[in-house]
Image (cartoon, rainbow, N blue to C red; front, side, top):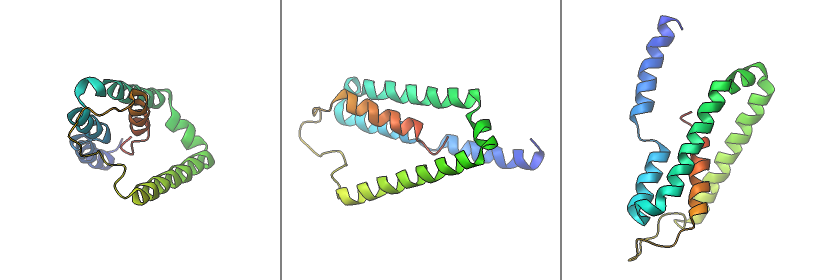
Length: 128
């Protein structure tokens, strides 16, 4: 890595690392809302998702995508379309996807739903 790239990489890496991640925000919010014990399956799924992304980076998925630019372009457009779809879904939900304001903070939330949501957030995190 040359000096100019290193001078850009270090502050960028610091800023990305210093900001709060989606997984941390999800863990903190749900732990405060439904309790730490009920949030544990979600936290485990986040760790599995981060480990999977790390493993894929180690085995060289980036190298594969760089040698096959058409595959990279397809994945880029599919990912963009998915983010557009999620934005429309959130917009149309009109607040239904937010955490309910109820007198019972230990509301019934299926652990599998929490785990799937956390896993998807961990692997689809744009910070990677």
